[in-house]
Length: 64
Ligand code: HEM
Image (cartoon, rainbow, N blue to C red; front, top):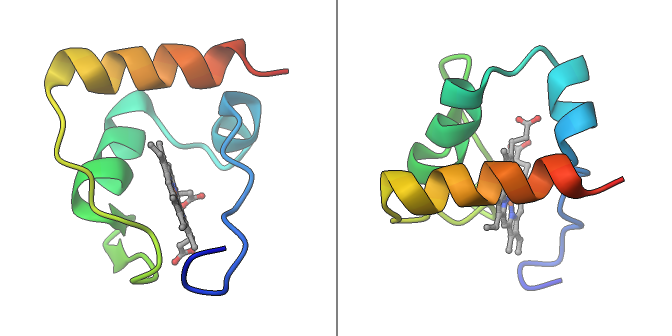
């Protein structure tokens, strides 16, 4: 897909297993950073409002 890599499983249950907090998920989405590491360039850096970020996280929570 796009840059030739498969996007990882980002269901909320999986991110929680990785011990990611909601704030860390937001950092990954907007800054492409997780635990001080820069995520692969393949992961887009998304510009979105706090409300949209919360909506995305709530959506991820709904996925089985
Ligand atoms: C709104 C849509 C998206 C959201 C909310 C999102 C969210 C995330 C999150 C939270 C991570 C960090 C996972 C972790 O560190 O365990 C991640 C990583 C990643 N995402 Fe996305 N993502 C989105 C769209 C995409 C798209 C469209 C692509 C590719 C075309 C993509 C490719 C990747 C890749 C390759 C990584 C792994 C980066 C690495 O391990 O260095 N993502 N994404």
